[in-house]
Image (cartoon, rainbow over all chains, first blue to last red; front, side, top):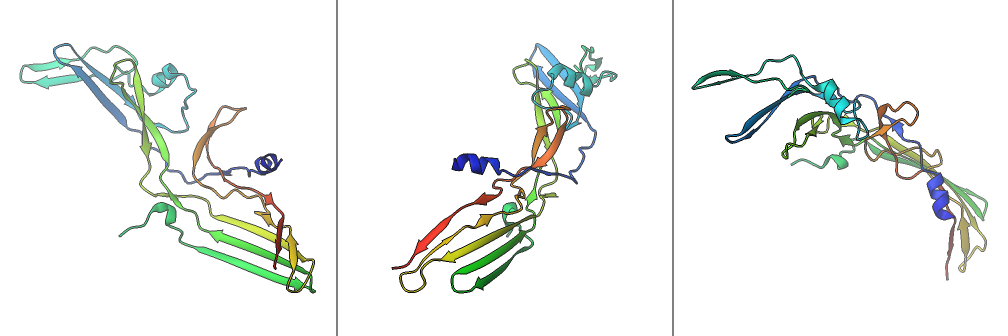
Length: 89
Length: 140
């Protein structure tokens, strides 16, 4: 009964204001398998209130992926343009 | 030398009022105020390629350290005390109430999802609300 009483008196949470907004930035991540492949992922930062653990990962990726970029690699042998695979890859 | 953010209480005070009603009754009221503690919330996320190449991982983006302050915490406690037997072998009982206003004294910031609109929002949950209890004491 005491547990029910204490649980019933849990106060409503307070609302929050003044949280900074994350600046929109392009995120470039790469992963390379030696002598095999090189993957470059271009996405944008998004706010903590724009997606949760229950959100569809594909929908989130569609919203944050950068799909209109041209990625090139410059090296001793010249410049190579990477092929776009979609969804920011 | 710095101090932990949880101990950064810029203002901390209490107002205590006690009054005796005759020989047997006494009332008391306490109002305590503590300014909000500093906090470093998650304000965003970004995606990186998972090391296993099976998808993407989300990495949190934090605000500047201790840049956000939680809401001020204050509560009101009321008490009523009754002494049934004055003297050396006195007994007394009371019925105090902790946090009479049932206000949340925030312990952090969480991200909760609204059940009806499925929107996410920040919230500051409290730990203890209104707690009435009975006290009894005696001397011998």
